[in-house]
Image (tube, rainbow, N blue to C red; front, top):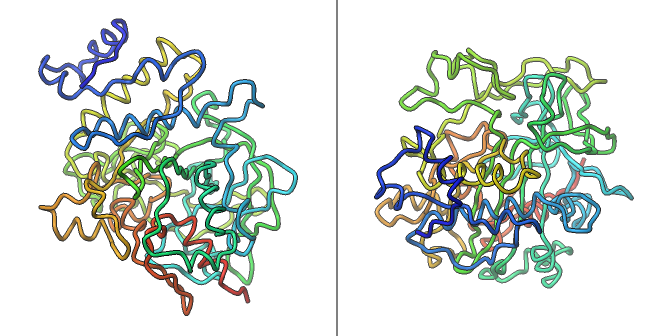
Length: 448
């Protein structure tokens, strides 16, 4: 493993007691953050070269480099972060295919919709818009979590080359069609900046958000009525195709103050508090594990203010991705990135409040084929080691209520086909991205 650390940064890192290792262990486990990522001109675009299959570090390096790249503005641009200028599905597909999100209109402002818990199968449009029973995450200020999806030019160009804006062509696509190298999709989760939040610890921006309203006695998403909010980034999935990995590398980042980790060996349904020492954005200190990570029916505290009763306390059930401790490559890479920001790029200081929590990929691209549930195959045939990285990977703000059921991205992102009622999309490799499957399934539904 190449060691590309400045002497001062290495000294700073090695002074931390939790990072002290023998020379042999450090050489084997250290995952460096190259100095080129922190140059004055900004973080360069990753090459998307095939990572060394024997080095988890190279997968994590790709994720952190891409995170830094998309969370910086273009030189000489308008100052907006790169990923906030990416196209969203609602820019590409019709309103029928993106029913929760407000239309952009003439505004370049970020548009967000309430984040719903993932369902095991596609649901009807009417159910899809009803938020009160779908596991909406509510922060400790009583505000719901919002989210967005973002696609880079390579992803959008792939859609256009294959004429997928006409969603009928998604169903007609060859089963073995794959996303090309360089395709990148992001999912971002956001909380409304609350009165007790320290704004200096978050990346914040203005956003147009869909509101929630009572309709026939049920709380429902209403994208026709919006409001502007200052929102803080709390999570980011970074998902991209590199050479040799058409299934995408699925990596996720979280804000450090989102939620506590479930202590090793603790019962996720036990009566013990997950953390008794501090409050988090999504956890009230002292809350028992048994009272956390639970879907709650939404009850308005004030519809006008969009505030709700009964905030949800959450924790990260698998903080180390199925292991008993964090992969040393992730631990040292996070520390190296943060130390390099201190040493060379203080303009990136806000990103020290975020960390890579893991990534998952296929160890062998031969496993990527239509009709596959990769996570299920990995569970049934562990000796084949189908999945690489963290096999129990989730983001506390995006997969809150499915952590114990669907334990990594591939439990949902598979190529087995999707259906809702009489609407079916056959098994396809492009089905690994929900941007396309959702556009088809939702676009084909007829609202009552």
